Length: 509
Ligand SMILES: Cc1cc2nc3c(=O)[nH]c(=O)nc-3n(C[C@H](O)[C@H](O)[C@H](O)COP(=O)(O)OP(=O)(O)OC[C@H]3O[C@@H](n4cnc5c(N)ncnc54)[C@H](O)[C@@H]3O)c2cc1C
Ligand SMILES: *[C@@H]1O[C@H](CO)[C@@H](O)[C@H](O)[C@H]1NC(C)=O
Ligand SMILES: *[C@@H]1O[C@H](CO)[C@@H](O)[C@H](O)[C@H]1NC(C)=O
Ligand SMILES: *[C@@H]1O[C@H](CO)[C@@H](O)[C@H](O)[C@H]1NC(C)=O
Image 1 (cartoon, helix red, strand yellow):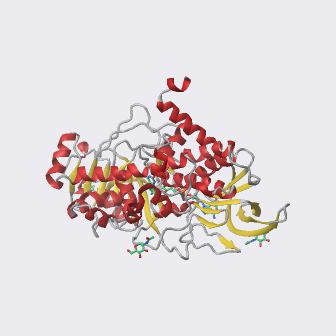
Image 2 (image 1 turned 90 degrees about the horizontal axis):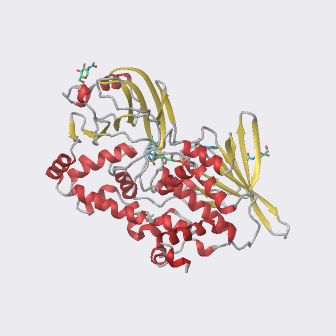
Image 3 (image 1 turned 60 degrees about the vertical axis):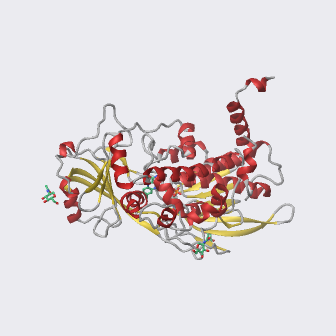
């Protein structure tokens, strides 16, 4: 038989492919397909939603995607001295499977790798310097922190293992109606607890030492989320996974994934700001009343509005970040789920670093640290300082030592003053500042995460950020909402919020 000749991996792969088509081929046609879907926001979340919605609902549905700023949102580049550099979301983990899939599917490439070296600055001196020699690093860390490092690696690995389950669930078409249910499906009650306590509590509970938390973990949460070890344990683990090896970025800029997904999904980009979303009741042919959403939007060419069957809000609803009025119902966000976004200012500087600022007596010609993390001290004005490589690495590129002018990125909670700039840099010729409301200010314990469903057929993608904010998290949320929207539309309850999927699906593979 043919089947016996096919290796098991191929069979699994073919099985998964067929499941990928499920929405189109075998969905019971309980009602007509939706005619029009609106997406608000063309960041990675909104564009990934367009991609997955097209997959679920097929070629005939019209998908409009509204964007008031630029496609890419928090994935953005800045031109400094003739080259482009990432100013927002920069790094991608090797196990971020949706991002990987997008890059493959869109014919993009990972950016060429440039070796990097890390150091940790405590406001006075470099308290840790990575060596070129792997064994030297290991010995230094063992000396100071015992087996904390190895244990951290194993702890994060254990969480990552469970995290990876989401890809299998999604491949089989399962969706979740809330962030908490999604977290629970991945890692059970342990994940819910992790997301509702601080990283500090979680790691102290696991027996990690306070000095390890202060010296090593805090610098990592500061560079990734601008916050201390009191962020929630789940986003903390995501952050620590971001200290793994094999991190990558998209050649030409991460935002290229967004424009690629937009094009691939054949969604129509409407350059306008959505001002209001209102419920309209219409009676259908069968005499039943159906809800439609009237989306009002304004652009340079004036205001307009349009009706949709399904709406996905793919932009934060906190702090007036999106400024959308809801009419005919009141969504619980942000009223019942208050919160704010943390400001991270990304300052890109083309200039000469003053290595004395770092308390280093090193000859700048031999100073080669590319990523300088910081400990959590009141007297430190910066979260991190990194030497940047352009989004496309030219042939023969090598990072220049600190004795030559280069492009540096400083993350800080507030804009840098001239005094602060002249303390860090001996000289500079270009400064470009971008103030982000970057990611939620995490302060567990919390009342709960915002809902995915704001109203019937109206979904909120960025609820996910309250577990953890990252490109991949937005992509996972996008796939979840495309599946959820599909199942809700066709009344396929058995595909939503199933318990114990992990054990049930184990037999399937
Ligand atoms: C400085 C910084 C560093 C980061 N580093 C990383 C990293 O290294 N790795 C990582 O994975 N993640 C990182 N992140 C997080 C990551 O960038 C975000 O989680 C992700 O990009 C969010 O994407 P999104 O599409 O959900 O939201 P957004 O990118 O914010 O997209 C929302 C879009 O909606 C638009 N919009 C808002 N209101 C309206 C309206 N009323 N009408 C129409 N359009 C509207 C906005 O203009 C925006 O383009 C970082 C973020 C920042 C700011
Ligand atoms: C949306 O636009 C229409 C047409 O201009 C207008 O009648 C309606 O009041 C607007 N709705 C909201 C909530 O602004
Ligand atoms: C570099 O920093 C040191 C110490 O902060 C300072 O004394 C020195 O003047 C700075 N050098 C330049 C060129 O700015
Ligand atoms: C988080 O924990 C607090 C107390 O520690 C509790 O009151 C709250 O209900 C929890 N939130 C969730 C969503 O479980």
